[in-house]
Length: 53
Image 1 (tube, helix red, strand yellow):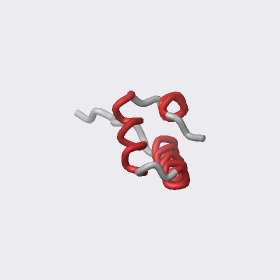
Image 2 (tube, rainbow, N blue to C red):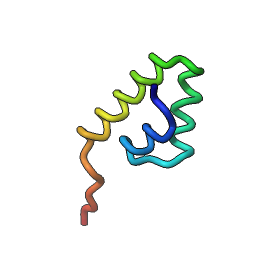
Image 3 (cartoon, one colour):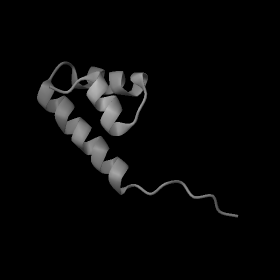
């Protein structure tokens, strides 16, 4: 089961962001899990912001 605490720990996000993911899934555990995996993959592959100039 994907909980708010699980999302916060693994994505390193805020309570509000975790709650928004849960709300977006409308109580569907499979949708929430797939969304979590998508966001985790984004976090692992996206580069950090670099200041230029």
